[in-house]
Length: 398
Image (cartoon, rainbow, N blue to C red):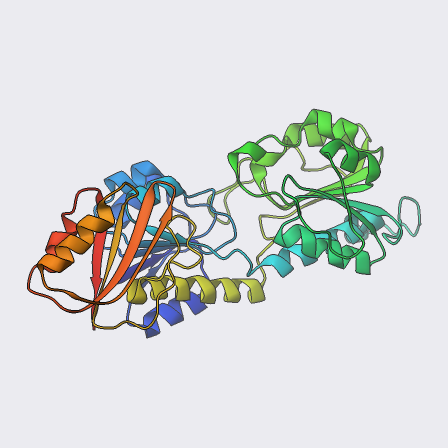
């Protein structure tokens, strides 16, 4: 089987998949739709990061038989997950592997902005000695407001408390507070109580434009703003206006509404050149430790799906955890309508199949069945593949 890995995925993924017997091709940059379509010929598994978009157009026009996609990152908003499921393609991501890296960067930037370290650093490189405490503060005793209290937000909460900060958080889900953090009932309440705001929301479409001119105006005067989540959740121009007017004292941004597709391409933002603004090129999770863990985790998930049919932690297909295989294993992805499983078992009965294991799981409009067969007459897999409402059927043997 052939694997295509894009966007400088960590070499550990290549090692794991190569050692498992796959033919692995790696490329450094992201691909646009047309280039991606032509590149998928003969490819069984695809690995991407955040800049390659998997659209319905790509999946509908690809010349190969793609079986699985690995997002070697946290987010999956660059993937049309519904289209993946409709094409019978399993998708996996790494929801936890780079959490600590993002949290450490956020905490470092909070301290750096409070101390205005980037401004001091620029002055020193320019040959100016400006020894002054003006505008420089400790973070101890100050308040941090976290928007989005998932894996990253809650861990930032713990680390910020260790620095002596008072933590408030707001989330649309009912999340349990960590340590002494205080839950706010509304975003407005959070903004009124916090001197630093950090966004850690997910990529759902409802978060588009979450933070705009009104929210920046509601923030406390001379407060700090961080966004290490998604580029489409904030208004970049409104943030620049709030900083230039002096209403906000600083910002740290790692994600942007429009990002270059490859390293070395030009980057332009209205935030450039503003004092006490830290701009990083979407590297929140880009530490050697995080990228190694992501490469290992997602590569193993892809290999496990191909060799066992397991979809545990899949972000599009129903989850099925499989035991060790007995005999031949057939995986059957189908539309979740009444009668499919009855038809599947009828076919197996017609072929005198001995079923050693069977599991079914459904998720929305998709059903996923895994069956181990130790004996059957010829043609049983072919017949399963032609059951009405079948999306994909694959047999796993030695």
